[in-house]
Length: 287
Image 1: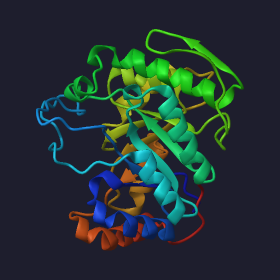
Image 2: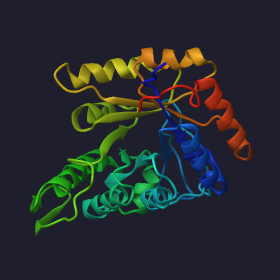
Image 3: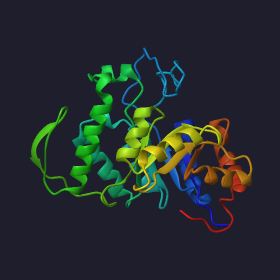
Image 4: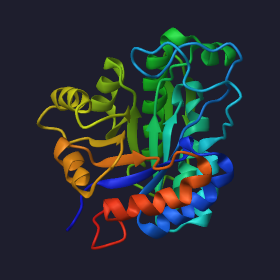
């Protein structure tokens, strides 16, 4: 059976001391990608949530956080085939020069394996700590993304915008992937869905079930339109039986980002069990 559904590893659900072991095993048994979340800082006083309808932060401020692009560049040197994704990179918190250079470097050192998930961010106190206005985060993200695309693809770039302005600059080398690494917009809000449909190659949702994923996918198809190439759809989810693989495919999902373990210490056994159920270690596989 040729499977279209790809499987990504959710590194954010795993204690960092197990990351490398899990990544190496994931590549060995046929995972397509690994995905790492990020934040600049977690203020002690946090409120809000990326989960619609929730008001409490999903993690405490003491949660270990790394520079996602630097960490993925390290993993690039320890792997050969795995795609390396951010889930998601808060592009609007950075100057586009900084973001474009970091993303270009990951794509270069990985041999063109970068998958860049971006988001506007949900944590208002983080924006304030960085000296930025939370209310303008969407516009700032859109402008930063537009500048990055030009830096990655044009010989000389000059820009005058609402948030960023600069004289003509050159940016070399360009990313290996042309015109740039695949871009995935993360988020469940109406604004995030619109941004994905308008400006990205894919959409990254939060954890979903086969029932819950149908509404955002229908909205994305409507926003994207029939003339544009379809978005690549990545969501968190689970596989209990081999038949679930087909069900996720039929639902319109291209990549399932999974964490098949209860505790970090059980990750290796959990990955092996998942591979057996999902059929990763048997038969040909499409990527």
